[in-house]
Image (cartoon, rainbow, N blue to C red):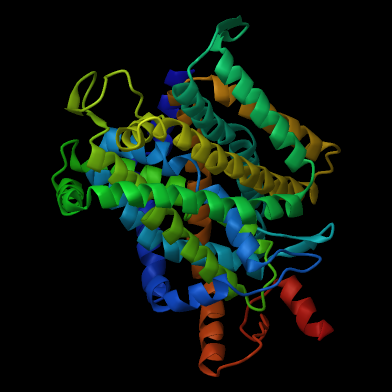
Length: 494
């Protein structure tokens, strides 16, 4: 199975997708006149404002839900993998894809707000919705929805739970080895998998508002605690930081693992971590209650910064400062070997060992705990995304009990992912991320040339800001934007 997954990833994550992600980010950065820089202060203001309603959640809750998807194992194990396979220079390309990707995140999240709908008492939206409404190609939207259900319901949860299982096992030992029908598995991993699935079931059967309520408290807490520990470690080695920066920048262009490897792994893990262009963030953006679609687009753009420029960078600095990493070369060779050869780069081990070096006895269990919160909330976000696409599919195909089946399938996938090998779990997840990225980015570019709705919304929002409006309004028909039925009805009801 590993060889089949590797073969698929070789096709999906070809250089074409790597450069498409970078090109799309650069294209939308230019088209929005680098909105991620110009309106940075406005992002902060919007982040702390906004109210929820009976149909939707607040901007901050929507940010928390999308951050719970962005801030996950990619920030700990993903960064380690980028360094392990692409060298320190891969971190630079994670920064690049985050900076450019913020413009892509603005675009896709604004589109999700423009074309959202009210479904069963709550807001729904995402790439499937805006692809259908703008392009009229329902078949393409259905393909995206099905790919997203498969990715977020079956393939991606296993990465998150696998990292939790590996981190807990490294922190507390494997315990007794148990011979099961799917192989010999440690008692620690089985117990961890069971605990995750029980808690997961309790929350996902409670609906999106329970997910939002849980994540708005957990996400800020877990990110802050992790950043404090990382900053303490960096502060204790502050004299080494300039050298680490120089190594990252230098290796990005003359890297030890090859220029292509640094770009490839940096973009691959950067997109997985911050999700810009992947098409997952817009689902939470659509659920927010805002006065103007561009407002949530700006909030979502800021979440990319939080994820990669803050959290991922902290992880990278901690790993590189403490030297707790290897860099894989061709075959079984190592270009850099600072830790044991059998330490998997696709696991959270590099990060755990780095923190353990500075905080003996604390590092491994702390990272295991942080990773639990990071990854568990990401699994919740995946469920919400998959559920939204099930709701979209149900508009065309009447499939009773589809949502219930999705919940069971996600719980089974989470359990299975916890106990399997890291390479297989990450390989399956990369297939899901790659499929969604291809479909969504191509859709975004088609939409741009068919009417530029996200740019029209930005221009309208900036005009109202210039007029210092106290209450913002959005009239899609006035801007030449069609099929934005939610906003059209809102204008009529006023």
